[in-house]
Length: 240
Image 1 (tube, rainbow, N blue to C red):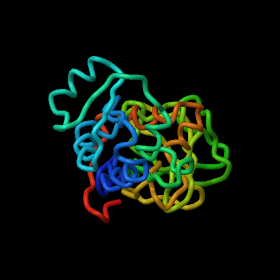
Image 2 (cartoon, rainbow, N blue to C red; image 1 turned 180 degrees about the vertical axis):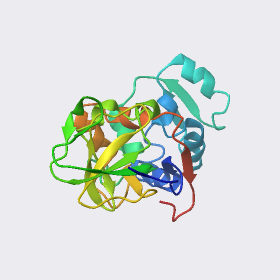
Image 3 (cartoon, rainbow, N blue to C red; image 1 turned 90 degrees about the horizontal axis):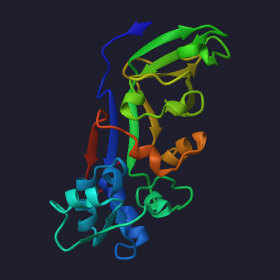
């Protein structure tokens, strides 16, 4: 196994506030209530609320009284907050979790991580606990530092794919607490290469793709991502 110091952040959830603004403009700032439940479904409730208020949103919601009590400390002036059940369709469109279903919206979150190590694997060799995945041919594995300890769903192992160099690469074997493997085929990744899961505007892969892979609610994908994944907020017209 080749192991070196990786380039850039090990893992990152990049939140594009301009894309949030764009989605709000498409949906109509005064035509819907923006749900901030589950820390704005993993996007960061305080930053999202402040940005949304700047875009003209005046109505917000959460799903519990305990969340509401916390939010009142910093809710933007001139806005209202109610407690109600999550409207998955509204959340999906506002945060751009499934752009294919509402083509005017864009993904607000882009989830990525850097390759930590690479390893050659022979055809038929197994990967991770229980060897539930075996290599179809001789090839290469990339170890990526995202695991279920980060809220990266364990069921995605053997079911979902990641994007490396614009290529769809299957997630090979079970997801461990701190990492998982991606099969890059005959070409090895380099340590420090970026692996993108969803949110790349040039790709059709969305958070909904990962939800559908395991039959989960779309809103659960970003909401599950934990605090070990840094949120990096992008601002400005050209932020992406």
